[in-house]
Each structure stands twice: as C-alpha cells, then as structure tokens.
Length: 296
Image 1 (cartoon, rainbow, N blue to C red):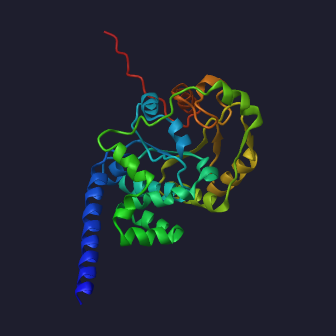
Image 2 (cartoon, rainbow, N blue to C red; image 1 turned 90 degrees about the vertical axis):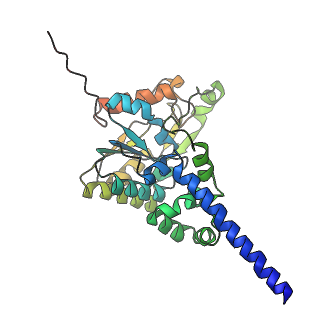
Image 3 (tube, rainbow, N blue to C red; image 1 turned 90 degrees about the horizontal axis):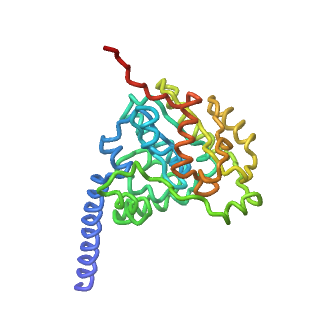
C-alpha cells in the first residue's frame, strides 16, 4: 500500500513540475521579441508580409523598409515546412487584414522540410491551425506535446525564440561572401526544384486566402548563384503557376556578381539589396515616395 502511495505521489510531483515548467517556458515565449511571438501577441502589424524559408531571408527587412517606405514583417524560417508557412500566413492575415502586399519566396515548395514540424509545438497554444497541422502530420509528437508541456520546448524553434527573447529579429540574415572553393565547385553542383503536389496545393491555399481578401500577393523565386545549375526550373514554374493562378517572378538568375552571395542559395547583404531593388524596379514591391520639394 505504501509503495503505491509513493508511486502516486511521485507521479503527481512529475505532473505538477511538468505543468509548472511548461507554464514558465510559455510565459517566456509569449513575451519574446521573436517574430511568431510578436505576431500572436498583436505586435506584428506591417504593410508587407514576407513568407518563405531561409531564402526568404534574402529579402532583408531593413532594406525592404527603406526601399519601399513601408513596414515589413517576416514569417521566414530555415527549411520552413510549406504547410506551416501557409497556416502562419492565414493566422497573420486574420489578425492584420490591412497588410498591403504578401511576398512569397516560392522555393519553399521544393525545399520544405517536415523534420522541422515538431519545432512548432512551441506555438501550438497560440494557433488552432498549427495544432491541427501537427496532429495530422506528426500525431505522436502532438500527443507527446499535450501529455508533457515541457516537451513542447525541446526543439530548435524554442531556442531561436529564446535567443531573440530581448531583441528584435528583423536583421536575421547571412552576411559573408562565398568562398573561392565553393565558387570553383559550383559548375559541378546543382539544385533540383521539385514541385510535390501536396506542397503546391498548400501554396495554392495561401494564394486563395489572399485572393479572397483582395490582398496583393507576389510569388518570387529568389537569386541562385550564377554557375550553380538549377534543374527542373521550367517544370517547377509551370506547375506552380497552373495551381496558384498567379505568375511566378523568376529572379533566380538576376544577380551575376559572385561577391553578392554567401553560398549557392543565399545572397549576402549586398545581394539582398540588389534583389530588393530589382523587385522594386519590376513593380513587385512599391517604390518609396520621395517627399515633395516646395519652392519659396
């Protein structure tokens, strides 16, 4: 009998400890300056919403803001799963319906990584859509995260949110120059832009959500290192455009200067400024209005 009581007491202590630590961690997330925390906290209002994976970080927010004279907000994350990007965008538009432009970096379709899905257990309490995606795609993880609240924070996304606990993340970027070794190897390397139907349909959901709200949405393929081969590009573009009903603006070969890249798939600050200027020149992003000059 005593043994049973001790076992019950031990389990009760574990349960209470789990819930207490989970509550403390959740409070830290709620007050973090990380992008998703700010969005769900009500501090994400912007004119331009940027959606994508790490290649979406090419659209450096301070440069976008300066070039357009508007405020931007980014939902981008390394290897972002396509379905999470879609539901985050839907959550954002529900909360901030006055956004003027949604800018989507389309390689998210080809480079979506389901391994990152469990990381978004951290934001399950803030979004029924995230909760639903995780329950559908990672059922075991979803059950573990509901059984143990501490489990929700055993991931990279939580660590990133804690890193930005007390500072903004709008300067999250890559800022070094590609090495000569990578430059020399580039002609013998390649990336293949596949278009899995499930990810194409998820991006279609995003497009339809913007269309139904009369929100300007632009689909862009960001620059890729000039001598790095891109396979299935035309097939990728054709499949995507047919599904979403919007053109895909292909800027994959728009930057020729090697020094504008940090690696094969990411521009540095120099290249980031170039692609933002290119998007403004093509009308993808609006140009900042110059103040009127008055004569006296």
